[in-house]
Length: 290
Image 1: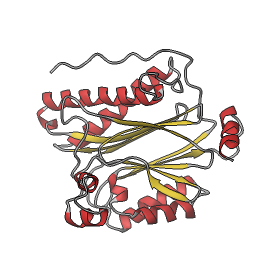
Image 2: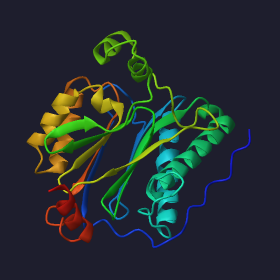
Image 3: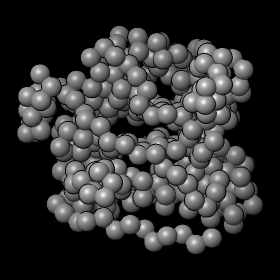
Image 4: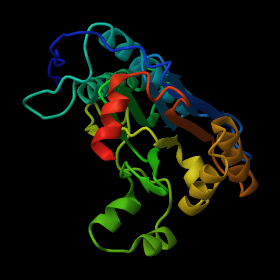
């Protein structure tokens, strides 16, 4: 099956360095039941980029698939952001170049994983979920995901899931067959309906949102949210809001305490204390949302 040529976005001023503005904490743990960690995570505060991938399938195939995903996406985004301004809006889609770049990088990673699985007997059947975010100058966060790895946002005391799982449970809920509680009780967990590397082509969900100065974002593999309810995650983030390292460590500790049935990956992102006034767009945000 032929694959369409990759989109070539318009070039412009490269992205600004976000490392002085963003605080990013990245942690991953094997958990208590798995012999090895099939999750892969990466974060680059300079780019404002963070990625969580949860691998699956084959003899060490999950590790291979998730590693290909994060390394491919990171490499492609570094190359693209050196020459393209992610805040520019694509007139055809209405989305930022940042969101489109994430989509293209994930699409490329899907092809790399699919090809490797087709050529390497030990990797047959492997795949991975992925969630990736890009926070960039201009008060924008771009989000892309495939599968059931999640992005949450804590804003003004409200904690909510931003991504929608590509899972059997979520599909049953969307179609009205079950409430969330009924679906969780009656449907096997971890049955994803979309993942990287399973088919030659993949649909990547992308979106843009506004990033406010007080926001905290949580990215995670399902090893966290399967072990801890959203309410308990919210309470933990609120309790340790002054220290993201402590917050991430506590989330992993609780997940392990509750069984640790899967690998657990957590990335927390928020503006650095004292950095909110360094860049002009923070000041604009205060004016827009005050």
